[in-house]
Image (cartoon, rainbow, N blue to C red):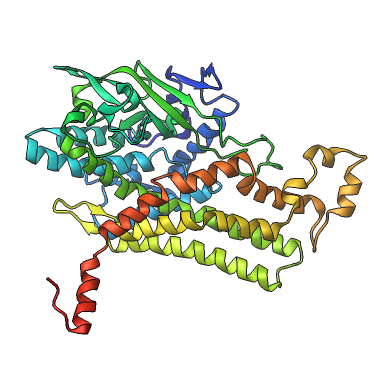
Length: 481
């Protein structure tokens, strides 16, 4: 089939999928008042692949000369990872600082499944890697979009799956057949699910033999019977107006509670079936790729923080104030450390025995930790420069009023800027930091792609402390046992 157009992609979403929004069934996600914004946002992936200015970056020709989305290219070296990072950053910038995430996260999972299935096949005599490869080709050749459902709802987080009050707090196998399996459960925080063709399901944690039924990975079309998507309305923005919500009125992520109500999965789409020893390995391997995606899409939002703060410093006439310069410098340092570490993670990648390039885990997690740990402080710097009108400014209707508009023009102008343009800049800061959308981004900064604590654990676990201990011991002339 090759590359799809924007129109072909949107048409593919009209397939009878079960989606609800605020308690009502959605007949067509592409025309829905709120979900339609997300559909048009994610369609940008297909527009960029067609655009002359971006085609070379966003597409790739295989050995037979067929053209595909570059997202499906298996990374084999640092340059492949750098291209992937640049593609993700570029598409996020074109999306108003909101990541598209309809191919990025799915291909992260494909690469992880490729790696893990080879190990499982070798140890267990299974044939999962051939299934993964066939599914990868299917997605690549048909230019499909993918979501990843990994995070189980968990119930009592102190308990393992079989210790829970009821067995469905973690997704699990309820029936095994010769032609496939039946699964039941729910996954939370599944991003972009209403706007994709396929869902990849992965385990969320390491488990023991008693929880083998919960060691399952598979992929199915999103309109498979029994799959129900409960779309979250949060982060959808408060206004369709570009004046009040310059980003969220046009660009939006949508997350779902993804329910699997006795869903049948064909055998050729099953990639892990009760091999419990591999559940944690697969979960962690996916994270190695997905956090690299995360730190690739963060810089455009950081750039927008810098730009909005610097623009309002000019409009407020405070650009020369020392505290303003100090805050802008901190925003710049925050941004460029994340960007630099993401590039370093690609340069310093690990090449597996079968030629898959894996981003450097320490540098990837350092980038994600640095971004998340300073996010709320960065908001404070931007809001301090912008001022209180971020939340007390007049409404767009006031500007349209012949009686009220003259007062706004007279009193709310700034340094070399008229009142309306100054209010637009203030509303950008409100949309990014003090709105429903801004609050969504704050939670995303902390919990998306793993919490701050998860990054700290990973950095500590994977860092080579022995190398540093050996150096210290050598300096003082002590032999380590």
